[in-house]
Image: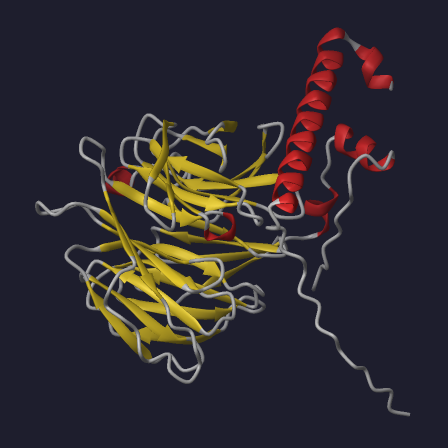
Length: 55
Length: 349
């Protein structure tokens, strides 16, 4: 918050980065949704491990 | 970030690649043998012997059972990883420049060079990965994608998500996209001014990074081939990869090999360069090689990277804490407010 008040250039840079960050994340969520809808999301392979407790 | 030097190759490295688990590193060079190393300590596990020319490319399947190499000796070879035995040699009309298994290991793509009046191709072969019968491999390709009339030759290629598309980089800076089943050309986009030297995908294979002799790298979206990001360097770039866990990309390159003797390592810009993937800023450089970096590869868990140099060495860098701690304020804020998921890698000593 302090940096936002420092000067115009810093403020603009922060805002620019914030936008780039948001744009990237929204693009990624969009792609992830498409992949999921297509059934292409590779779920982590979880193996059923029957753990035996040896006492 | 103390590097481990992998000394074993006698000539320039051409490609380095981690297996899916990242416990092994595969490397190929202009010296005719492929090497397999433990990524943990840099000890060499073994070599694949049999090629009689420069090996341009190597890949390993997702089960670390089979490896493939593509060579300037006009052949591609299939190897059993656990014993280094060559189980198949495909004879080609021209050198093999790039080889890659499809994501589910059932196919192999080979980029064959366009030389001596022969057209360049992307040749797709079926792979029999059945443990019992895997010595039986066919010579019959499933598909041959010839370089289109008027198009420049393909230099690099790889499989997109689900093995659905093949994305290729061309010597004139064009990226093209094909249906991996039919070979139908979907789209071409001029991305770079000069030859595309490398093309590596994100972990989910929905986007990829290209590097070029034009001193830039770009991230493109697989579906639309839109340029999403641009990274500018001050030397020709030979390779680029996208780091999982952190939002970085790593670029490697430097002054061209033929000019190296006239250049000191200081001027040659032989460093691995780290850029912020989203903000496109250069964050840092890692020195070490005394020739251009021909290839950079990232560990699948994002815990280390490897670079293969024109100097004949592979350098393996395990990331330390400061690498993971580095964050922009914007990222820190987003994490603090829960806007983005925080991924924490397992850091092993």
